[in-house]
Every structure is written in structure tokens, then in C-alpha cells.
Image (cartoon, rainbow over all chains, first blue to last red):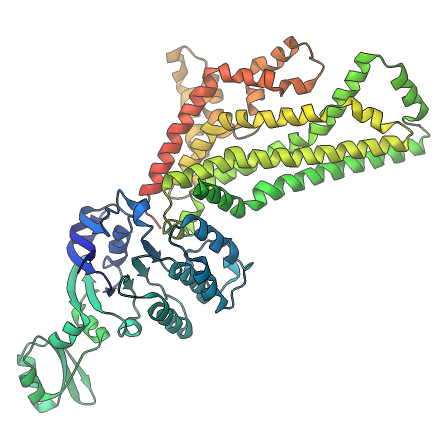
Length: 285
Length: 322
């Protein structure tokens, strides 16, 4: 498989904080990667480094380009949606389509117009007259009509209602994503993207603390619901996390033996949000 | 090239109000004021029984010698171009604030992230803004001024024909094509003259984390005050005023069309040498205004502007506060 993004020793400091601390990772083509971390963990900095929007130390290769020096050519193959509020307020729908159609060599105007036809947007409407959800619809229509190899989404659905959020990811999956494309997404609404992710990366204090694909998550991590009498045994197996529900304890294990776990109680695959909470314990303490 | 055209078009979309509507509104206000003045004059004239024009005028024209007729023609030319004076001031203000906001506003509202998500180099982006300020804005202003000028000429002709003056004969005395040519010829010169200001303002716009206007004005002003207080210019055997005139003014006020004429002390004297001192338009005529091309001040300004624009491009790339 060919790598879309390869980072080694990626390092970035702001005045008195370390945003990225010698990070190494590799993202393959045709994946949907969730980059998940608490506020201030370095997610946005990592994305900005990939997009050539910030300086950094270390090696970073995006689609064969160095984002620091070859940004103009890189951006023909990369799209990004930063968050909902970044389309200029004066821009009209018609102007946005005209402009991107004429400056982007890989833009498909017919495709964009087909997406727009499914929305309530009108050609003369300005961004400042739109709701947040409509702005995202416009941005998504522009981005989905670009035949890019890498799509970067930084909190794309922040502040949207659930209808827009569902529609956003559904459109991406149905009309955009294929094996030649790669999507990197950061969000705090982990539950909503859990089922579409193929890979998972947790970032904490500028370090990648978990980098795995979703199938491996199910094999490696397990959640067991244990009744009170067996709780002490479970605790001795060094669980990642423990919580109480209806008088029973739920333990989260990393790489524990399946058979042993099953003898203690009902074994489930943990959700990404439970895994996240367990991994990030004590971040803000 | 196509990308560059669309980049300039984008600037026009965003600043339609300043680039297009501001000169139009100014021109229309100018016309309305003129019409009001004419009506006032007519009313006063009628009340006091003074007959303007009429047979007296006809006789005057008939008796006028060639020199007098030329004067009338020049008067009409000046009337035709007078709206440009007002439009120039408005355009200067528009360009000044356009340059200050050009590389700052999209950082503040974070829409820079959208523009930077497209395959456009920072150099093209900044240069498209420079071209918008130095070519697009003055071209629109001149077109508007010419249209307003022609309308004004027609209004004068109509008013005079109400007083039984042969309006056509009068209009033939004016030189609309020469007047238009004069205005158009000044656009390239304006572009060169304005570059140091445009460069400085855009540099501040790209560099400032906040309040670019304050930085753009305060830095040269404070430097000027320091230079004045400590008499630094004395070291170079130059008067203090040299700094204000060649640095502070050039950095801030060269975006105003015609500032080169005001600046050039010799301009007005030189126009006398051209033989048609009676025609104020000769100050603007290419024969005369292009003498500026020989002045080091212009080219040093262009050089300084180019360096500042290069700085603006660099800061456009590295500032990541969005």
C-alpha cells in the first residue's frame, strides 16, 4: 500500500507549550482516519503541518510533497474544511462556484451543481445570509466536486444540528469516498464518526498515544461487565478503566486474554468514546 | 494567467462597494450639486432680471477672437474633468483602506483558511491585490469620471441652449478626447507612484496581528517625530522636512491620485514653460506628468514598494494566527 502521509520526528513548539512532540505516523491510501484528542492536544497543529499552514521541525511527506515548500502543488490534491465559519461572508454561491471552477484544475462543475441542487441554496445567496448548516453544505459541495486524493476535516460539524451532521457524513461516504481517497477527520463528536472510521489515532499532549485500525481495536480492547463478587479478580488484571453501572462494574482491558474475560462476565467491544475517556484519564488534572 | 484574472475578479466582487459604487455615488452627488447650483443661479437670475447668455452670449462668441475661444474650450474641459478631483479623493481613501484590509481581514474572520485550501500561491494572491489597488481601482475611477464628465457637458449644453446659446458650437470648443486621454495616460503613472504606499500598507496588513491601521500610521509618524526631535536628518545634511516629505508622505499618501503633482514642486512652474499655462489640464498632460519618470524619487519608491510587497508575501505565508 502506498502512504499518503508519512511523518517522522514531527516537532512543533509554541512559545511555552509543546504542540507536537516528535510524532511519527503513517496514513495509507483509502483510509478514513479519526484523529482524536482533548482540547489543546495538538490535533489542529498536526493538520496545519500536513496542509503547509505552519512551520515545524522533522520530516513530513504528503503525497510526495513537502508541505512547507511545495504547498501550491500539494493543494491541487488536498482539500480541507477547517470548521464551519471560514467561508468569507460576502461570497455568493454563484461566485464561489465560478471562482473555484476557474482556479482549481480538478474541479467538476457539474458535480458541484448537482450537489447544490439538493440543497436550499440559491445562486445569489451570500454566505452571511446562510445558517451554519447551509455554509457547510456549500463548502461540502465545493469540496466534493474536487477530485482530491486527501481530504482534511478539522471539526467539520462543530455547532451543527444533528440533521446536518448526519447528512454531512452520509454524503461523504456515499458520494465522495472511494479507495483512491483518504480522509483525515478530527472531531469531539466521536460517537457519530465511529462507524465510518477505518483507523483511529489518539493524540495527547503532542504525542500519539494510540494508532491502530478499527478491526484491531476490537481484538485488542475488550469491555467486561463483572458482578460485584468477581470485581476484585478483574481489578487485579490491571484494567485501563473501571466504572459502575447498575451495581455491576464495567472494566476496560487492553490486550487481556479473551477466555479469562469471558469467564468473568459479558464481553463487549468498547466504544471509541469509552476507549477515549479511559486513555485520556487525568488530562486536565 | 486565468487564475490571476479570477483573483482580481474576486477582489472586485469583495470590494464592489469601494471600487465601483463609491466613485459612482461621488460622481452622482457631484452632478446633483452642480444641477442645484445651476437651478439656484437660474432662480436668482430670473428674480433679478439678469439675462444670462442669450443674444449677448451669441454676440460675445461671435466677437471673440481665437484666444478667447480657446479659453472657453479649456473652461469646458476643466468643467468636464472637475468631477475627477472629487472622485480621486474618494478613490484614494478607498485604496488606502483596501490595502490595509487586503491581507488582514481574511485572517481576522479566518476565511484565509478557505482561500489557502485552494491551489493558489501566496505570491499570486498578494500581487492580485496590488494590481487591484494600482490598476483596477483607478481604471474604474477614470471610467466613472469620464461618464460623469460627459453627462455634465451635456447638462451645461442643455442649460445654455435654454438661453439661446448654440450649445453644439460650444461643445465643439472643448476637447473631450484629449481630456479623456489625459486621464487615461495618468493611470500607469499613478500605479508606479502609488507602489510604495500600497507596499507599506499591505506589508502592515500582512504583518500586524491586530490594528493594521494603527501600525501603518503610527510607525512612520513616530519615526518622523523622533527624526524631528533629534535632528537626525542633519547627519545627512538634509532638512527634517525631507523625512516627512519623502518617507512619511510617500508611505501613506501616495495612494491619492494627483499626489505626485502636489508633491512635485516644479510641476506647476514647468507647466508654464509648456506654453499653454492657461490650460490647467496641461499639469496632467502626459508630456508633462511623465517627466516624473526621470525622477529618482519615483524609482526609489517603486523599489521600496517592491521590497515591502515581497515582505508582505513572506508574512502572508508564515503568519499562522488563524
